[in-house]
Structures are given as structure tokens and as C-alpha cells.
Image (tube, rainbow, N blue to C red; front, side, top):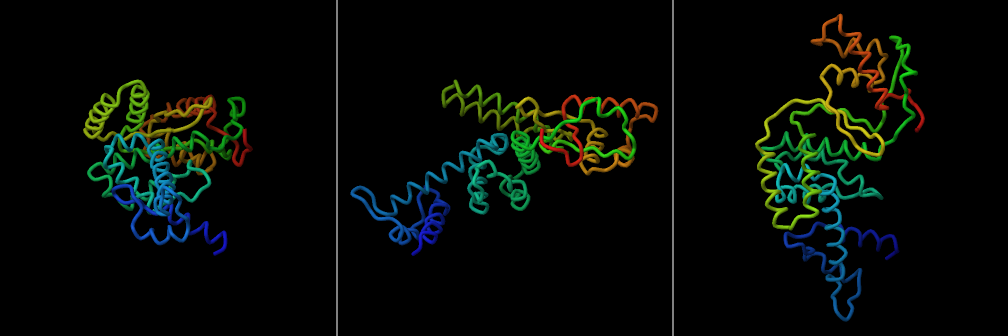
Length: 290
């Protein structure tokens, strides 16, 4: 057996799903004998099991750290079932665990039963929490300032920062995610019993949440991730700019069916562009890193 073959077989064994009791499946006993020698205290399977459990507990913890809002929305048990099923089908394939949840939205759409009656809420939360990850360390380009926007001709094309994500959601999950963060901070200084009781109350409250359509921008500023709600017209215009349409075409597309009176449209658009420039959202199409 070559070194590469040994590494592949060992990786396959370590990354194989654990049983319900967090043990390696019995079929790996023979594989363990071929990969690892026993020592004075442990058999080959027991030695391999240490690495397997370390791997699985690590990736499960990472998924929870990245998606605490999803855990709160579903409850711990349902989240654990979802996490194990997802990671079994979509094991880590990147050098960094940052990308662990990259396929979770697509996977959940293909496996809605894991969210049960709370599918729409869970899907919105997954989309928000992945956008949060993208905003945290996504690419930043040199922003355009107000002085760069003095002449907004109809043929001008503008870009949006790559770390900015626009979301159209069915539930106000931004409020939920903020509440989860606050409770997690509180739990750092609370006993386990208090934290668990509070978690149950939080889950019950979230599951009673009523749908509320919102438009949201998730972005980074001054090394922090921020959520900002948008009205529907502002969202549509930003989405059109994201497609790199000329400003004239973007306005025409975004304002179809708008409730803004024609005499107020110019002032509204100027206010939006000024705000976007202040927040550093706008950049040149194909701009360089900032």
C-alpha cells in the first residue's frame, strides 16, 4: 500500500458517519486492523475511533457555531439530526472549515423533512447565516464615495461590494439572529441548567413567529457584520445594480409597479445612492480590492 492509498483509506474511515451511540460502525474493525497497530492499552479500532470522534465532534461544533439561529429555530435535537445528515452527504472538502455550510441551503431545499413544519423559517435562517459568513470575510473592493457619484448618467454601470448579500425573506430572521447572539453572550456567564431552560423558551417563542416579508442587506463595515432592512423599491434597485445593468435600465426595471409618486422618485433615488455611498456599498464594476 502506498502512502497516498493509506491516507485515503484512513481519511475514509475517520470521516465515515458515527453510529447513534457515537461509535464507529462495526464494518470498520477490519479496516482499522489494516491501518493501525494496537498498543498496550487500545485495539486498532479504539485508536481509530479517537480520530473519528474528534473529527465528527469538531465539524458538528463548527456547524453549530456558524448556524446558531438555525439551531434555535429547530431545537437542539432536530438540529443535531439535520447536522449529521447534512455532513454525511456533504462532508468537508475544503482546507478550511469556514466553507462547511456552503451547501446547506441547497441541501435543505432537497431535504425539507429535516425542518418539518418550520421549513420556511429554517431556510430563511440558513440563508441569513450563510450571508453573515460571507460578509465577515468576503472580498472588499475600493468603495466609491459621494464625490464619485456627482453625475449619475443613465449609461453608467456600478458594482456592489462582493461581501454584500441581498436577501428577500419570508420571516424577520434578522431579529431572531440578533436575539440568539444576545442569549449566547448571556449564557457564557450562566449555569448550564439556566442556559438550557432559556434555550427551550427561546425555541418555543421562535416557533410562534408569524411570517413577515422583509428585504435585507447583509454587509461588513469596520470589521463588523451588519444587517439593514430595505424597502422593496430600494432592494429591487440594488438587485438590478448587482446584475451590472446601466443605471437607467436598472431604474426602469426596479421601479415597475413602484408605489413611489413620480415627483418623489428623483429625491428617493438620490437619498438611496447617498446612503449606499456612505456605507461603502458601491464600487466600480470589476473594481480592485480595497
